[in-house]
Length: 128
Image (cartoon, rainbow, N blue to C red; front, side):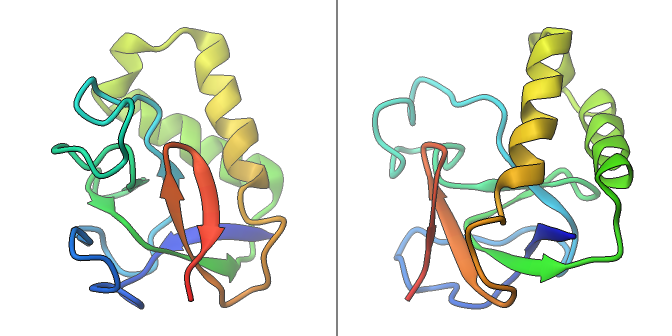
């Protein structure tokens, strides 16, 4: 199954790139965007342009499309568990969690394995 994983590849392509994740960990698009980034992904926070690592709970601005030995149920369980362990869960309704899971399972579908992607306020695009 194609899923997004944290990568340091192409870091530095944008001057505001960062990667605090563990290389290869599963990532999701940050489920909440703060006021600083709500209108501008290059705002002061970084949540409007980052992915969140499911294990580390940290962020990265780059993700790799990876082919992993996961079923959709495996991935959904990992995402739900990470959200339940995070501080995000207190701000989310159950249907929001379901939406994050559904979105995450589809994020990599339009890209070839090995493609490095970035996100800009929820829009996923390949990096050059």
